[in-house]
Length: 216
Image (cartoon, rainbow, N blue to C red):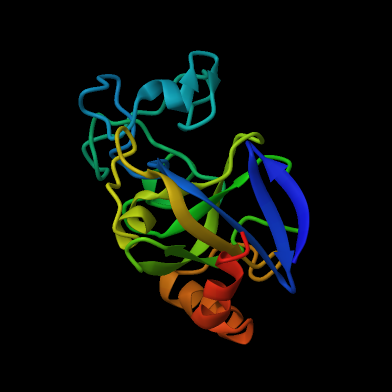
């Protein structure tokens, strides 16, 4: 393995066609129709994590720069439309269906400006060393360039974690494998999972991952 980068104190290694790293997990609620609300007690995550007036990065805005509020015809009336970098074709950017739902799609977040050919949509695998839980995933969003280890609510749930964006996650023990350039762009989850399974098994599967994890 080759050490290629360190992000927020976390070392990232290259292992053949994969990037691997071990750290904790921060729960990212972006894309869920219930993620953000004007009233923080109602939203799954704190509105401050979506930006601020004039500088919203986690919610969709109209031509006037104001956050778009879901109507009675949407999934969660009264909540803001929360965005992700990976989008679902065929829907307006003002509708919640246009974005990956953190509660329904297992995804990881690529740090901004990371490079190394890691693209939105690329697939991977996450493994919780403590519980043994594991799950395939796609790259669904872009996060801060100084932080690595963000995952969607569904991925957190699949890994046996508290998956609340406000209080969940873990500080250690999650092993990540990402295959750069493997499958950029959107696919329904069943199709993404098949691609991920193929890459993961080609790379030696869980047996190889456990061997690598011991060296991280």
